[in-house]
Length: 395
Ligand SMILES: Cc1cc2nc3c(=O)[nH]c(=O)nc-3n(C[C@H](O)[C@H](O)[C@H](O)COP(=O)(O)OP(=O)(O)OC[C@H]3O[C@@H](n4cnc5c(N)ncnc54)[C@H](O)[C@@H]3O)c2cc1C
Image (cartoon, rainbow, N blue to C red; front, top):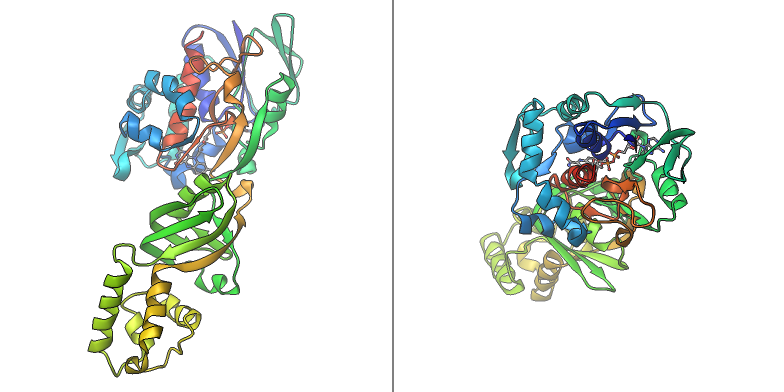
């Protein structure tokens, strides 16, 4: 069969490898001058290409499409991905949180291995596909005839890597519904002139809660401040969970391990031991130094006050603020800045075993163009690979 694949990213290359291995004539189109442009920037250039968690944990990290993906993930598991890359000359290593990387720490090795597996595939690079349709039993891709078509054009973030959302228009032309695309794994913009003064500051072991009309979401871990908002692991995770909710504000708990009562006790002890010191000095044991002046300002306590002059009511105010520092939510950063796109080809119109369209026979989808997304940790690339292998299984 003559098979066209639109997109030479993680899913397009994996689909090409799977299909060419069965002896078909495969042509891959990509608008870029080289393959796998997004792969190069994944995992900060190290490419966290899969995650070795057990099935249950893996699915807990899938935000949208978990049920749909079960079959593909069980037939091409994270271990299968590791074995695949090993077979094609790339050894891997497992790090914290079961994240798997190439042993070389080079994302380019992932692309190189995929390209070795694509031996025999024809590449039409610097070719952005404008038009694809089916006439009779044949598919036409910018005028060229094929027997099967795979759309693997990715999402619409980091458009300089080629995934600019043009694939959704192609899918729509075949009659497919597209679930509204919103940013996922993205920083959050907040209100407040003070934010820029905190840029670059990172906080560890904090709890951040997004207060939403549809129910709150909360994450514990590390976050950091940007020029106009917040980012870091727990913020990215929260963004994926609230991107379809109405968020009112973020509540930051600096001391999630302590109840208000215990924290008050700790403050009392610290105040007792440092009666003559300025409050700003004592607060250094509870907050990063860059936060202290701002924090005391919010608590309406002058930073030069002696600890012994702090009233019980003021101490309670400090406790309340340490447990619940409210940050006004503005919006998520734009989709361009999102690690992944939430939304895409509506899953009910796609066969989860083969990724074949239920509307147009011979048409397939793989990777991020589908309405699937997951948290950070190698889950998104594993989804791209598993859906691509599911396509291959139908040839
Ligand atoms: C900064 C960053 C870091 C990331 N890090 C990780 C990580 O460490 N681990 C992880 O699991 N995931 C990571 N991801 C997510 C992961 O990269 C994507 O989920 C994955 O690349 C999706 O693969 P895909 O093949 O579906 O799409 P893509 O990799 O985006 O590939 C789509 C391809 O289609 C081409 N294309 C699009 N439209 C057309 C057209 N009309 N004609 C021709 N070609 C077209 C594009 O040029 C592109 O090459 C990261 C994402 C970003 C942005």
